[in-house]
Image (cartoon, rainbow, N blue to C red; front, side, top):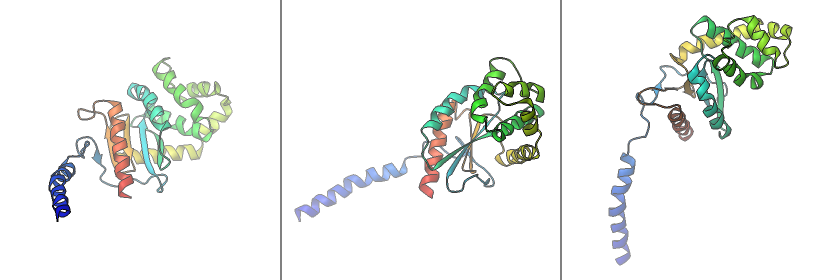
Length: 213
């Protein structure tokens, strides 16, 4: 009898605490810290949780974000698929997206990705046409002919067109932005004032997707 009274008292003490924990609001709130996209955007690998960074090489905010992204990417779990995605809504961004996909096709993206940021944001080389981009790629072991072939290839132009269509699905209006699993869009602003906090929102949504699967 004494034991049952103790158990009852424990329930009475712990129940309000449990209820309080359940009643705690989530740290990040839909519509404030992130938005749910109106339609699900197809991801590259449905078996993983995709985290996609929408960036532009000419964006100074993206340039400053790059070291944070690299540190964050280094500690990713195996069930997370990180994807870089070149944003575009003008002709120069489209040229840079074309260069990004050409670098992928030439298997030199890892070598040229950060240097492209540096060239534009530090050295003042806008890399705004094929000739300037070709001279840049030559520095990384790609011949001018190889670059021209890849840059103007049907497959690269197709990827640019597909990415441009996806931009409309992501509803991105600035860079850098992050998209989690084709569902959630995160950008910096009043509610998410820093890039570090944007990554914290990303981590929150990754865990949300992980727990719902």
